[in-house]
Length: 335
Image 1 (tube, rainbow, N blue to C red):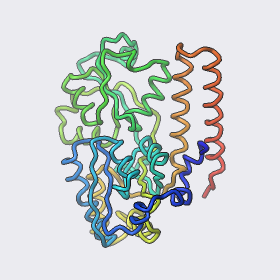
Image 2 (cartoon, helix red, strand yellow; image 1 turned 60 degrees about the vertical axis):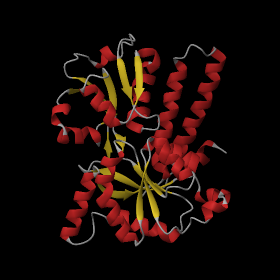
Image 3 (cartoon, rainbow, N blue to C red; image 1 turned 90 degrees about the horizontal axis):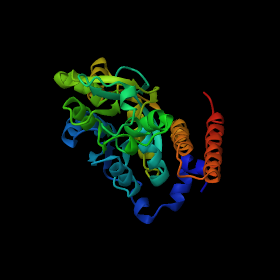
């Protein structure tokens, strides 16, 4: 299967490959909503509760949360028909498209109204560390990085920090710990690690409001280019009538209704650090596929374990994939 076929994740192709167990779930009696593990499940359950209740009322069917210990959990949940709709990050959505045929139908906006966020590197305010100090790679510092399927916690810093600097984190620091955003932020604030990366929204903003004493211990020393807001995706096997109901709910929630209803919906969205949704598709991921290829290319260019011929061959292959992605993005219909 060609590289772009995986990006497009055609619903028709996936439906043709679907096993009977999936076909039986076209019209489920209840929906399972997958939620990323950016913090503890108990905290996520409390914050997402009002939104899921509103979704349940709109769809006229039970909507149950699906929590997993890591990003891979919700990806595999969709792959094996255990979850129907998922809030993904762009990086985890790439994997879900490739492995589970996920179809993106909406994009989040930030509670501030922005359509993007940032990856940040933070240290303790008393450390005296600068970005240049952290990137000296003296193997003296403990570093916190995100889940491998996290966009702001892993893909973006891997691209714009480590690939750009031509270093491997494991060769750079004394220890490298993979954790969610909450753990990374608190680990820096309590001096369990010297530096870490995390998202500028979500836990970063909530920590500032909920635990200002911990937030006050943090110092930002690097910020990435703007990252497009997260996608929402559903299983391709869902019946079109159910997809239409889901789409209607997402596009009207926080926009339509009485003034009181809209205000309440906006409050519920603010609990999960989101604003009203906008339509989207798998094409949202093209920049991230390109980013991932660029990260791989930069890593290979700085890797002395390859022979010159091996390095040249791999770079040619990656450049071809990048051009394929750019051509597909350029051909995307414009409104």
